[in-house]
Length: 471
Ligand SMILES: [Zn+2]
Image 1 (cartoon, rainbow, N blue to C red):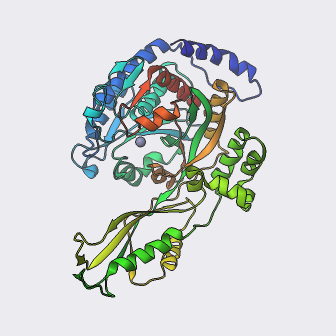
Image 2: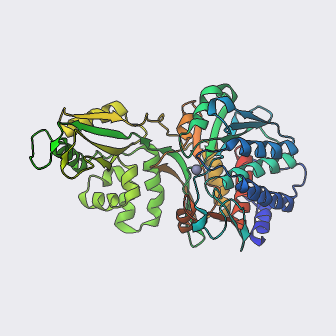
Image 3: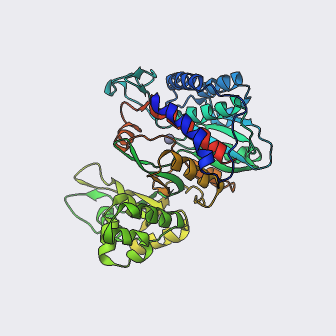
């Protein structure tokens, strides 16, 4: 608990030291932080006990749990979309009023979690067990922990009577982990509730923390677009003992080979350009210079080879194609009537799906191969970094970790953010915690997902300050 107390002291000292920056709204009543901390941990443990494994989701129970808590704080929440989302499912919406002089900011989390196999955990996954300073449970990191940190930050602002220029909008969605139907329905049906929202943040930030030291805080400003395809070739079935020219399998294999050898063009988006410039400080000499200007560096074969050898860097610099599923005959001696392959295609946010598909067809160069999209790509999502929100995160982060920096990160995977970005909102991914990289990698969708109490409470304070500084 001690580091938390030190942070409180820092907050009193810093605004004066940073005299040049705009004043930060302060509480008009003393905030009982020990109470916020106690209640926050209890609330998180209770929330983790609400089993919202998706499928089936059961988010209605989670939404009622959040609604009842907010009601006790004098915040009236609405449970929405129960008809559209089906039995046992719901979205939740609430709003804390500011004075309306600036546009609102929305705090979003998803209530569902991925399945957990109890036998592979050391604590029951829906127990909210507190052990050795950690809270265990499916969702501790993804993303009930962040959801409760958001709520407690809002509660602290409200209890302290911190003057707000922006309304604070709280949204909890169903079904992020499977179909995104929660966010999809919310953005479709309730655009009116979001009309005044300027900024929205949710999961999708990527901090780099090694041995409890924050290297950088990555604010998510963009993500790749999933564009899965199924390639199919039809033929004439017959016996495998007499090979024919009408076997669809070799034809598909040849097409896949062309696709596998195709090198997609390299393309630097604005957020990625900034990301490489920001992290260049961690790379001495030649490599640092390369990252300073990644567009130029990619023209140099040595630099290019080094940069693309990192699988994450490679994925944020181009559309990617991964050959994954294959289906031919289920009997060794039967030439099948059809062969098909599923291909995981991911687009950079500014790419046109139709023209990429045309390119893929040209690469395959065989009209016998038909392409079937397996998924409609989500809307493109890229948000700017020159905004009050991004600057607020930079300032709060600077105060806590002066040696770390804030950068813009792109997620190669998918979240609910594009649905909100489509409404014209500046959408971000923000991780308020400083979870060690190994812990994060192990826990999210893995076994013994957990968050340390110290980390969780620091996250509440972090969000409390971001929400004050963005006013
Ligand atoms: Zn998540």
